[in-house]
Length: 378
Image (tube, rainbow, N blue to C red; front, side, top):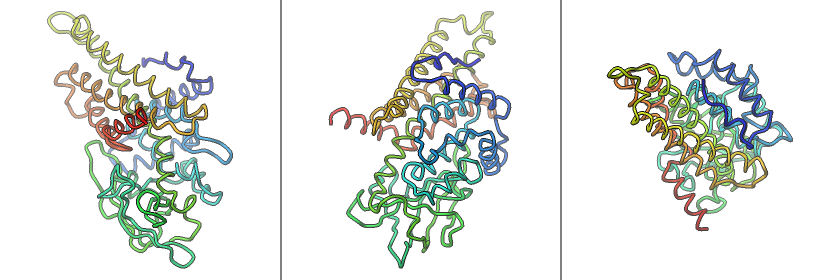
């Protein structure tokens, strides 16, 4: 039985506790999904999460605001049950984050579809030469007639190849660097948009390199004002970065649960592993790391929900600590499982592959350290 005592912390309201219980019950009955066909699994998960009503929390309806504590609780819970389910939920939120925060009424029609599980979203930000360095974006959006022409390439795009709509950041040239970018909403069936390459990774997810060859869009496809693309992207990441820490927390909780079960049931030399002091030390360190990560994740979420304009420092701390700690917790769980820990199909083996990418995407760990240092000294 996973530890749920954290739900009694003062960060949460009764609605959060009710949601966490309902989702955990749903997940226990429906997850993990069949991962034999990753594309089909993700499509099915989006549909199922939409029908169950959980995707409505991935974006904010007109007049509402995103509740970051809810986003974090959902990602933590789903990650504990199935990493692919967490991925499916997270990308709906991230893909439509710009529309949720800055979209026009017309653009929000897409948001309502993604919140219902009727369409799949993607966030196309990374380029071959600009990962964490968003200000170096090279893809162009040139004013043409009454609209825009997009040319360039995006890579490592989650849901690439299966998404129905992409949020894309491109260079519109209002000023050099970060001040010359704008954000656009691009339906996947727009002529000139293609999948250049599907990318295979250690924990299978739908990822792709996307090409834009003379993609023409109407003027109303731009999200927010011109030259605000960098600020929009950073605002989206400011919200969703803490949820990456929440997903890592879910992975770590599952690893801790698996490790506890293992040491309480496995005997070595006539005694349970759990009776060995060194093993108890490992379990203590894992539990400490999990609780510390939870405190940082839900502090960031609570701070944002209480009205803070930005939580860059808090979110960076949450993501950095939770992802790095989860890697260590999962590694200890693998070690405590012995040979079974590296056997394909074992839960801890799957977690070991799932966690690694979280220390890279939405700002690698070293980038989070830079953010924290600058915020602390600035």
